[in-house]
Amino acid sequence: MKKNMNRRDFTIMSASAAAFIAVSPVDGLNAKKTRQAKIPLGAPVFEKYEDPEGWINALEKLGYRAAYTPVSIDDDEPTINAYAKAANESGIIIAEVGAWSNPISPDETQRKEAFEKCVRSLQLADQLGANCCVNVSGSRNKEHWAGPHKDNLTTETFELIVEVTRRIIDEVKPRHTYFVLEPMPWAFPFSADSYLELLEAIDRDRFAVHLDPMNMITSPEIFFNNGAMIRDCFRKLGPYIRSCHAKDMTIREDIYTPHLDETRAGLGSMDYAAFLTELSKLDNVPLMIEHLKTADEYRLAADYIRSVAARNGISM
Figure 1 (cartoon, helix red, strand yellow):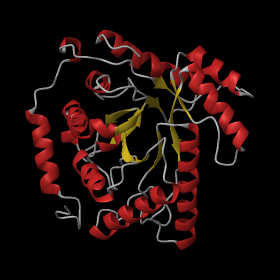
Figure 2 (figure 1 turned 180 degrees about the vertical axis):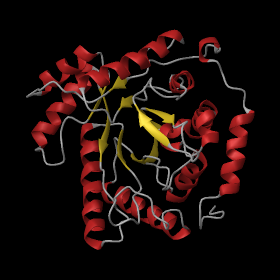
Figure 3 (figure 1 turned 120 degrees about the horizontal axis):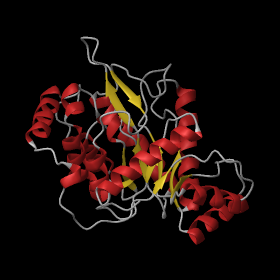
């Protein structure tokens, strides 16, 4: 179960990268057609709204079938129920409730506050009927709640993540949603295989997968063969995936050490043909655009994703 967990297993990582390279890349434009579902696309809404009807109208203007939570853990029950009802009646999927915090912080106050936020966020997701409540696993870094730290990939931290995640799920006992952890380059889970190890160790029916393949690009090997990595993720994690994030990545070519930068979908080298083809094989798993600053940037990202889908015969 916990093979060489005192550090990231570079042997396994190198072997995995080699396996990705060995798989012939699929040309998305010429890929074989398989049974496909309509992919629900979503993003933040910039238009101001004051009620569930206004929220639904804003989403429909943008052509989105998925949404981030329109309410917070501090909203009252009637408000939460009203938005849940509107989403259900309009066929909008509430993709995720964010519980962004550090439940494994070495600082006791931070850790307790994060645990409480995760519990309340999971309760909200369950009340909304959202696909998932998502957080990162956290970090042993006191200053940066989702940052790198030398102890993040140790056996002790893996076991702490298992313990904390079980406690969150057991505290809430959700019936209509799942608790998931977004992969990070320097924390568990950082790959499809490490996610499988967490699924096995946590051993809770309501623990599932949030897939952000860009966060799994941790080397030039994977960057230049990211389509194979994406297909590997869906092959191993597909039945557990509840929501996905959409963004892109570039690599600096003018320096001699690896430097990877996040960018808007369509401006990088992410294999969106592979991503959308694999996602379309799942049933109503939403794809959520994130980390952009303006409504125009989100529109451009959505246009690009829809154009790749159209070229590959995939419905959004």
